[in-house]
Length: 195
Ligand SMILES: Nc1ncnc2c1ncn2[C@@H]1O[C@H](COP(=O)(O)OP(=O)(O)O)[C@@H](O)[C@H]1O
Ligand SMILES: [Mg+2]
Image (cartoon, rainbow, N blue to C red; front, side, top):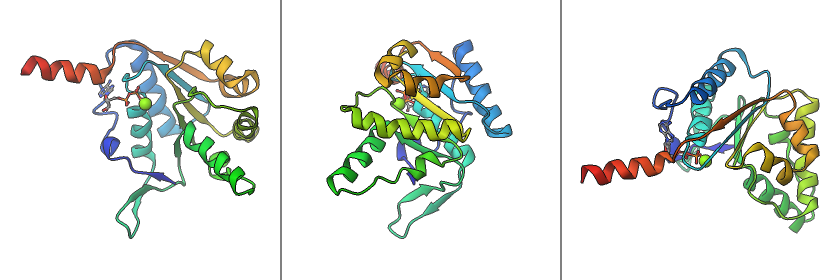
């Protein structure tokens, strides 16, 4: 279940500013996926602050309805898309080892669309990689689309993920490499200029 993140609560394609052809191409591909269904994996790479997570939430906000738990916390319904930073999946895997239970990754393996963020944060062991492989392999075999987001370029991703995961993720995928400076930094600079 993906929790609505306050920072990205209201992000959309309307408030995403394209300042390169690559960004325009990416936005067009994401909007096409929302309208007509995602037919291929999408890999988005680029430095920090280039708006990758913004676009991930723009997809969530477009596809998912929301519900409010009695605690007041808001969640995206997981029927359309699931978003997770890769580290949270790894943490679930590790937690299951501590309790000696078989980890249930079906929310990730079965999501009609999985948006997996921060791919490339180093994960420690081969066992973690094996469990992660299951997610990518199952989705690949079931032809379920995945959007993978990373600060690393594709070359680095290959060595971090390993050939087997990399192949399943990128085979036939649309790949976008965003460059440019951090929008966060830009926001700060603008404030400085105004002050
Ligand atoms: N092209 C853009 N148009 C509008 N806002 C942007 C853009 N790129 C980044 N931002 C904003 O800058 C902040 C950082 O973006 P984020 O998506 O977290 O970057 P990344 O995930 O690539 O590190 C967010 O508040 C986001 O809404
Ligand atoms: Mg991000």
